[in-house]
Image 1 (cartoon, rainbow, N blue to C red):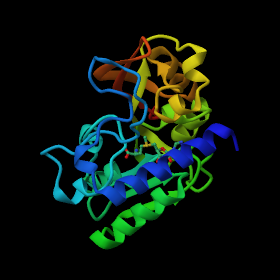
Image 2: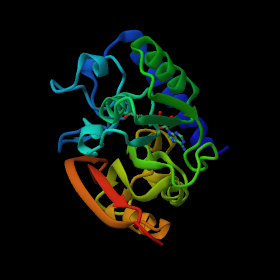
Image 3: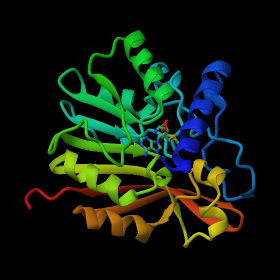
Length: 257
Ligand SMILES: C[S@@+](CC[C@H](N)C(=O)[O-])C[C@H]1O[C@@H](n2cnc3c(N)ncnc32)[C@H](O)[C@@H]1O
């Protein structure tokens, strides 16, 4: 396993345990250094978006490390849908998705950090969710899910962290049913990033070093076979003179080949 992957697991294990211990989820800020337009060099935060007033108490106790709030709501999930959350963490968006799909749907979270999966499973048991499942897997190779299985794939601030984004999008395409949708909330670099950013493990683990440009993501999504790619930007910030956005990249698997 690459050194970066080890670092990512360690970073998010520590971030989760810190959050669970201190119960500070209400006061977190994004995994990017700043969600404002101010320049910042502070990469100590690996927490993400704070819960909002529109979130239920049920969700507000589940740590969030995402870069776009209320992703499940924005993803237009329907009752009965099968939803997969790539890099679900402890399930902040997944439990929201489970509320949307209802008892006849399923919400499955995939993450390669063991403690995230355990925390998610514990929450599912405590809160009595019967339509939620967590699986331990690298999202670059998801052997545990069949082809043409899911209606919607969501992902919140994860794909920027992956080494092989093309592989992730190919797996997403394989798992989705024809007509299924990918809704990826992510960090987007405004321009090609310099090597001081892309080669630094800490910057990578903070969701910045591996961020692609809008064109970079779109190209890989298109290569995987998706169509109808649409990008919506929600916020902008700077780190070491590099401009970033957080946004949602949506795409659809064609109805027929
Ligand atoms: C910034 S956190 C976001 C977690 C969650 N989506 C949320 O919004 O709370 C990134 C998560 O992605 C997971 N992750 C990163 N790379 C991964 C990979 N290649 N396969 C599976 N999970 C991965 C990490 O373990 C971590 O839980």
